[in-house]
Image 1 (cartoon, rainbow, N blue to C red):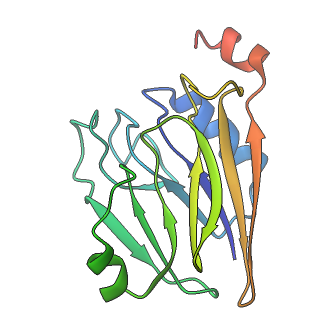
Image 2: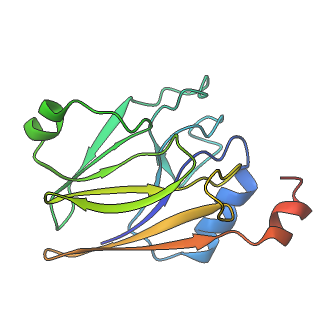
Amino acid sequence: MKIVLVSDSHGNNMALEEIALRHPNADLYLHLGDSESDSYSIYPYRSVRGNCDYFGDFLEYLVIPTPYGNLFAQHKPNVNSKLLEDNQVRIFAYGHTHQRKFLNENGLILVNPGAVTFARDGHDSSYAILDISEEKVEVTFHSLDETFLKNNNF
């Protein structure tokens, strides 16, 4: 299963479109909040609600089955461990911090794709690709070209 994972695009829908065009064979396009858009404007992405999302009817979190186990997606990095346990979560994806992260913490995969707009970790604006099998989760981070961002006023 291939998932394109983005977060914190803050109105930069052209970047979301560019990312989807770069990865046309993904099984799922997942936005981890702060799109500052509605669901129609960020199609084909499914999204959770971020703290800057005032449009649309996004849910606070999503639980998505994958070959590796359930993926739990929400915007902020803090989550009730009972909620993860109750949903048998093996992958926790979040945004909000604008910082890339990939960590295996006692069997729970934590992943943050960074930020499409306004990265805060010294990297370019970024997103992640998750390649998920029954045995493992591989994460690769990708950057948006600075020329693309400048030409589109971001």
